[in-house]
Length: 162
Image (cartoon, rainbow, N blue to C red; front, side, top):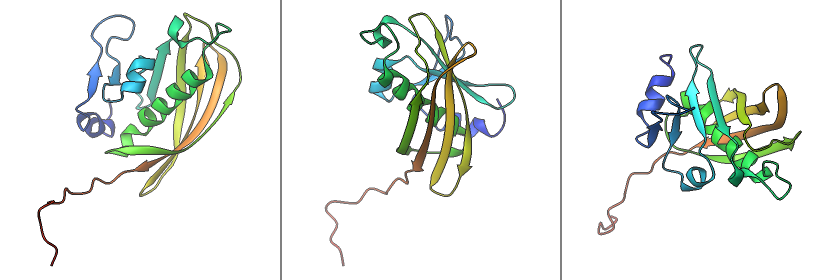
C-alpha cells in the first residue's frame, strides 16, 4: 500500500478485511447495509497504488434471464467510485452524478472486476470513470462524481442565540 492510501484506510472504522477464501486480504465497508446485502463487494490497493475492486457473481445477483441484474452492476459501480476515490476522498462523500452503459451480460460464477481512475479531484468534487470486466470482456462502463461532505459541528439545542 502506498503512502497516499494509508490515511484513507485508517480513517474508515467500518473497514472489514477478509481473512479467508477467495478474497482474503481484500477490504469492504460494513456501514452501508444496501451494499452489504447486495454484495459482498471487495477492493484492495495494488503494489502500484491502483485500486482494484471485484465480486464473484452469485445466484442472488441474477435477473430473470440468469444474467447479472443491471441494478447489481450499478450498485457495484457506485461502490467502485468510492473505492477508486479513497486515496483522495479523506472523509465522507455522496454520489451526485452517475452515468453508465451496459455492454455485455455476465453469468453466475464469473469474477467481475473494475478498472478505473480519478479524472479530476477538486476542492469539493471528485470525477471518476471506470469499466467492469469479466476476463477480457468489457461488460459495463460508468462515470460518476462524488461530492465531499463536510461534517457540521453539532449545535447545542438548548443554547440561546445572542
